[in-house]
Length: 147
Image 1 (cartoon, rainbow, N blue to C red):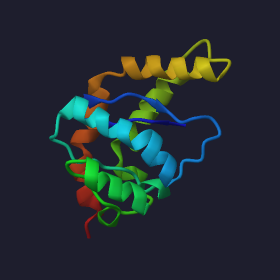
Image 2 (cartoon, rainbow, N blue to C red):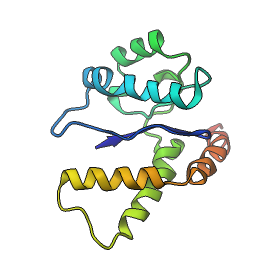
Image 3 (tube, one colour):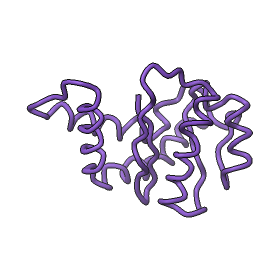
């Protein structure tokens, strides 16, 4: 598994989940969330609102408390609809663009280190426009959910 963050201004780093790790709230707070928030600060300074998806590890008390203490602003679990990958630009557009690039490779990775390296190259080469377009369309997707 891999995680990352995107915004109109750019993208964070790819963060690979340890093999065989169970991404529960504790793992998320100790190994992933601080890196994602650091990426936000690197790309956007303190001018960001962190949006997560509805994964159980994201909505648990431990990460919600951690974010309250370490993040300038975030969308808490009660303000975000559960199971809504169609509202996460990374989920509905960026990962698909990466997969499309991966599928065009003539030589596929043969092991996990090669796969990580390949994904990193694809991520590094991902044009900013590939991220900006779904971010711009994000408001329209949100408005479509309001009844």
